[in-house]
Length: 322
Image (cartoon, rainbow, N blue to C red; front, side, top):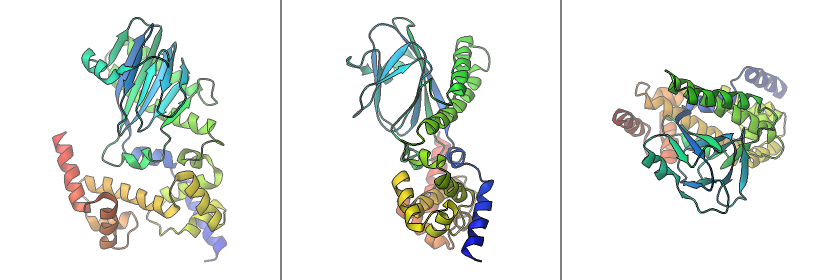
């Protein structure tokens, strides 16, 4: 098969591929597991620690400041949404205020709503959890802070969802918890979409790569057929770039070389498949593109510090305990 024929074949195979963002969020089991609400007026400032999760904060009314290490204070107004990665952060009425422990304040309240002096500012937060131990695959590739203004292109859906969320929270009707959780899941996706749209030029990372016609094409092909014996040259042909230019641009945008990304995603998929306790190591190795169980086990141990079977046993024990 000639290079042109191979390129055409790979391009056709990727044309109907699922988009990588949906693929990653689905495989990692991303869900908004907890919703919180703040109603405040006057002077207030709450501090929250950094943990291995993704969180969103959205303002329904009024204004607030987001404070993150190493960044200038970021103003938020009603209709704005932000996503926060590994880093700790504070939210305040004034960036000059010294924040108190917000996590403890919610614990002392004994519920998911904290009220401080009135309803001048109303905001909601959501904690995004991941099923299994693979959250770092996504979080390592995301910026610590992503904000979408209510004036951003593509924010219309966000505005609609925030309005529905606000109404649902205030109704306190039967099934409200389920409806709010589902709306929050959709809000997460729409925020990613809007962020990628507004960051098309400035954002060099994974999200920006998804929107880039050439990088996005290569990523879709890779995610559509992870077991394919991909080479950098294969992916470069799908992208319509030279091997050297593709490898350099991929590494610059995503923070790791193409085959390192492929290996990490293969192992994340394998870890999920093994956690169910039904698939054999040999079957999973073949499913994600390893031609021998031994090579797969070696790569798995290098990545996670344990054997595939021991890791699956620990995951099963953790699921039982939870």
